[in-house]
Amino acid sequence: MPGKNLDPSSSPRALLGAELRVARERAGYSQAELGEPLFVSGSFIGQLEAGTRRMHLELARQIDDILKTGGFFVRNCGAAAKSKYPDHFAAAAEAEALAKAIREYAPLIIPGLLQTEAYARAVFRAYQPTATEETIDELVTNRLARASLLTDPTTPLLWTVLDEAVLRREVGNQQVMAESLRHLATLIQSHRVIAQVIPFKAGAHAALGGPLRLMHFDDAPPLAYVEGLETGLLLDDPATVAHHTLTYDLLTASALSPRESLALIESVAEDYSHDQHA
Figure (spheres, rainbow, N blue to C red):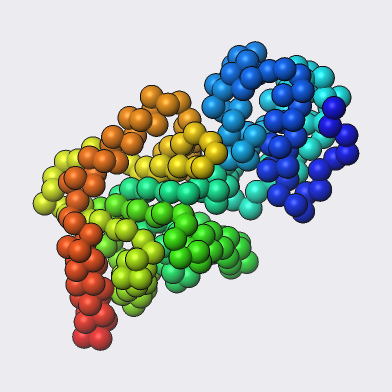
């Protein structure tokens, strides 16, 4: 049975997942067998063990009861659940940090991983017009910290599909937009990001319902994340993830090629710069 409490400073979710794997195997359960009385899938248990999903308190209580772990998971799930992100996005952000491939469709704004500081600040100020500067500063800092994923030259693979509205909607001002689109173009030119744009002339497409993110991992099943206004769902059902994967594939088929997309992004950035100086 697990004993000492986990050290919250040393990847508590990964440590908790490792302890869950040890306790499950000691008790003689497969992932699917443990998931059955918890009313979750075996893949969900695998994601808990891999650290890509958060263990909530009620689930921890049930796991302690089934695996006879003496309250270990209840005592430690609090540290593992702490996050600097909003509740509806926390699990997705933390899974994103472990992903080997991220594919994202953005219908309205530049994806968070690709935003500049000025762009992120304008977005958060629009979301929270009465928030203090300290609150906005913290939100911007946390968003920019996510972009540290891109410091590795190859991992994760990041492939984004942008609606043309992302380029045309003026967030902040023309200077902010020119800077943001040039930043995106630089990431594309350095082969760090694959980007495609769905032009307005493409008409209706498979993801008119909203944004979509797909995440793939080395040691856990893939996840899909869909979101709305202050809401988000992290999905692991294989059939659902497969459906969203098809949706993304259809988006890439409707979009401009990466070369044509880069040309459009650079052209729109130049338009913003020209209008600004004019």
